[in-house]
Structures are given as structure tokens and as C-alpha cells.
Image 1 (tube, rainbow, N blue to C red):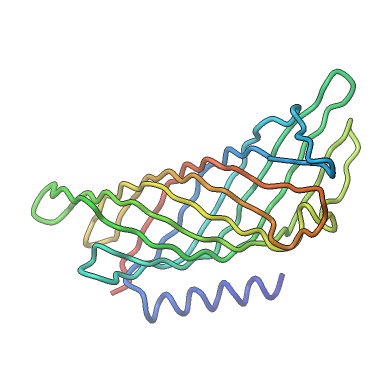
Image 2 (cartoon, rainbow, N blue to C red):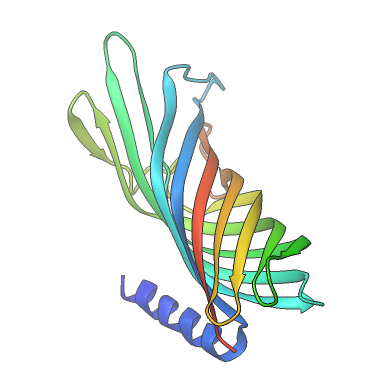
Length: 209
């Protein structure tokens, strides 16, 4: 946990020195588990679950302010439910990760002499690790921290859209959507688990310089 705080402090320090904008986003994850057992059979009883996500980081323009890169620290809930006539189960997980991305502003609308609305496409890559995980099976809870399907390094690629309302004296507000695909790159077992997530986000942006 101390390492996580040190990483956050380093991120914020870097943002204040080098970045153009500091951001905080939060929203909802709608996650579907894609699970295959050792015989490559899919469990049809797993249903999508909902969870929250949080991200803090900075963005900086690369070329003519239309292409930007971002670096952030993320916390994602990837949850699911399932069951049949004999059993009911639920998974609650949290992953802490480092995310880097690119954004391209393909259109900008000037609302008045100062404010504007930007429309952006974006893509990102996130590397994360499990910091909390529980499975509930018929009212009994099991720890997932040492289950190789869930632990290790999760690599997530995403693509999406964002609409941002710019307020020069402050920063801006944004709404966004991302489609995310996650895989465990350290799991050597025959049992495989990946996440497919639809993410809705609300962001607050602060000008640094």
C-alpha cells in the first residue's frame, strides 16, 4: 500500500511539472467474464456485472494540440455474477494499474469567444494487478488473491470516444465511453480468464499552465 501512495505522489509531482492538464475521471464498468476451463469449455452461467472505476493523471499535447498523450493511475472494479438452479456465485475484484494513452481531437466547436467543445477519439493500454478479490459461492466467501486466473499482470487495451467542454479559466468537463479488452499475460494455467468491459466515464480537467 505504501508503494501505491509513493507512485501516486510521483505521478502528481510529474504532472505539476511537465503537463498541460491534470484530470480525474470516474464512472461505471459493465464487465463480462470470458472464462474457459482446462478443456476450453465456456461457462454459460456467468453474467455481466457492474462496478466503479477511478483514474487520475495528466495529459500533454504532442502536435498542434490535436494529438495528446496521457499517463494515469487507475482503479477498476471488474465484477460478475452467475449461477444455476443448484448454485449461485459472485465475484468482486479491484485492480490497480498504470495507464498510458493517446487522444486525437477530430473536431472542435466554438461556443463563444472563449469556451469550446472538443470531440476526441482515444486509445490506451493499461497494466494492472489485483489488490482485492473475493468469490462468493452459496454464501461462502473465497479469497482470489492467489488464484492465477485473477492475479498476476492484467493487460488491458481500450478504444473510445470523449466529448470535452473546455473552460479556459478552469479546465473542462468531459463525458466518455471506452470498450476495453483485458487478458492475463502471466497466467500459465490451462484455465483462462479475460474481461470485456464497457466503460462510461465523467471527467474533470484542471489547467496546470
